[in-house]
Length: 474
Image (cartoon, rainbow, N blue to C red):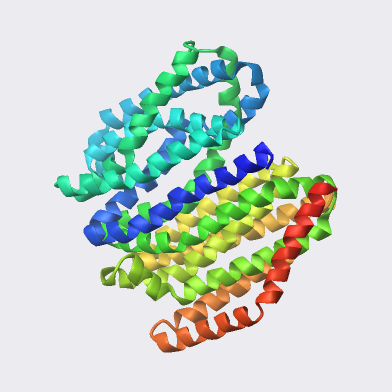
């Protein structure tokens, strides 16, 4: 197997492993933590994801990948300069969080000790992120496998240990999760500076800032769209309701494991086909993928009560009604990922930023209006509404691209139509939750049909695989 293909396979596995372990550990955390403690830890991650954009500027993300190509012969120097800039930004963020720790603690509904954890994590994470980006760029998958296994095992294990030895279980969970990242951050800073000790380079700092500062609104909008509901639920309803919402989100996020794998696989394939103008083949294949994904989505929605029971237990039973809109949102996230492949191919990043910003603003407005009236369940439906709005805007962008620049390899009408059917079906299924026998009867019938028609589905998978193989040969 060629090195890029082998490395790509292992990188995909390394991205899936932490997500799978996170879902498994949720079944443990929900049983040893109260809903309030679980809500506080979830609120921490929501705030961290928002503030880290300003403190770290995501210098380990897209700009670092571009720099690995732009400064191919000087990667060690660029890395040390980037981490020098990260230290400066991290120290400024650390100072702000510590100086204003008391008012920020009240605003964010977090203990001061977790603000210290957040400050350290923001200060040290870029070195870990840059290391991961570089080993991916250089196909050094063996080292990534080792670090992924270490982090994936030690992070939840330390969380459990810290929970049992901490008076505040939420604080123990967060510190336990982050202790290994903080330690690795220090190690990777030392390794980077041992290769090149120059932490300031005007050209490299300028390149990093010019590239990433315009992307801050886009990154922030995506985080707000995903995280603002948890922050606002904690503020308006309390940490306990946020705990219920977060468990349901974790259950729905099972679909993100498949989502990320599909996106990683589709991106290079779509780029190759776009280059060769094979739009029809892409549209058929993507429609089949969307149908299969929507079917899996419906199965999760159908069995949501059982999923919550296994994942969290009876005290989280009320969270079941959050899963249908959140699971439908996962399909729309897949659509965004697919649509953005073609937008980035044509380098239309500004419309992407506009779509994300408007959707995030709408999400905050709807949460502000409906969470106080209808509680945490409203946040799930506002999220769904905003992802529908986001999808519609991206459809307009793709229509403009198609009319002015050339074809795109996705049927926006077909893929979005599948999404609308999924949304309507999920609402209907919600009314079946009190009738488990009826739901299971439907599930069994559908499963039997799939088994009986397995040859048809295997033929579809084979067709997709052969088409991709033929495209590579061409």
